[in-house]
Length: 343
Ligand code: NAD
Ligand code: WQD
Image (cartoon, rainbow, N blue to C red; front, side):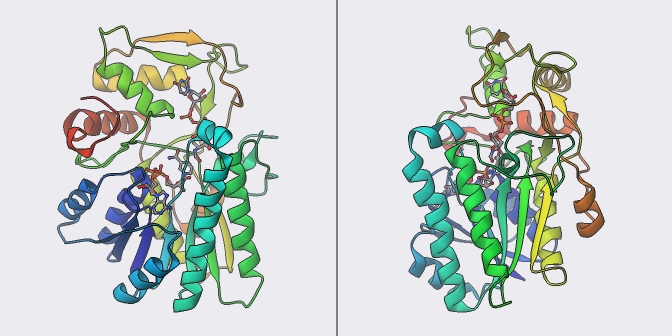
């Protein structure tokens, strides 16, 4: 099947392109390069051993989306393209709503025009807001705690409405927990263009700058967790990518609206991740204790039973592999991607 991947040059999109190709599908990448490099196309082609099509355009340009879908005879869409920095969404809510919600609307219009109505959407565990219970399953109440989260919730609602309409739309909402890692080739990984916000790229950066006085700030060491630092469900991006293949396969047979958590079901604290990274890669990560970050919760991890039951998908890779593959990409392959992490 030919599948359009909006945001296909990004962290999760590029790994999903590789997983789709490995499963016999044909990915068509579509990206405006706002947080990625064109080099990724070459890297994905190198890993898959075939030339991968790519259109450089914005999803808010409905005619460009229509043309890409027509030219490539696309049959389904995975919609990754979005802005994702929580703090930036607080300072620039308009650009987040315009890009994430506006982008989805114009994509859906273009899809409707060309008669393609199967879509997998990149949602996030952020839609669960403050956890009421752990592990979090798909029936947990949803709420938004920042503008980024609100864009994800609004997009989920728009897509849910479509499945209650004509009966033609088939939608899979994938709620990712904390994606980390990279491809085992070291050719693709997480390479944000601006200042990184997530823990793993910041941890990698601290490890790369050992000796310079730079360090990782551990946000909160007084949480009610085993070691006082906050707990999250880190999931290897290659596992996540394979989850998209399973979700696309399931779209054809299951309910019109399908919702799945993609995580490992296991919680790891910041200090545990840091220690695992140092051990796996035999490097030091200079770090200091810092106050809690505004808006953070003590612990969050997924119930992954539904994905296993209905998609036949379960994450296979552990914390050690996540640490090894994040470091491999940072040290071997990152320099010519134009990202923020110095090598
Ligand atoms: P990313 O920034 O690496 O990838 C997103 C890609 O979309 C980038 O290549 C960017 O250039 C592109 N893009 C953004 N706006 C666009 C537009 N208007 N038109 C065309 N392309 C556009 O991010 P990622 O980590 O790969 O995230 C992918 C998706 O998963 C996003 O929707 C994100 O919100 C969601 N998500 C990410 C995480 C995470 O921690 N990485 C967690 C949960 C959900
Ligand atoms: C993980 C843990 C931090 C940086 C965010 C979004 C969520 C989703 C995934 C998109 C937390 C701690 C971090 C640092 C630290 N994204 N930390 N020092 O906050 O769980 O989730 O990314 O949908 O919506 O909110 O991920 O990687 O930012 O933080 O101690 O320098 O690492 O406090 O406990 P988070 P994260």
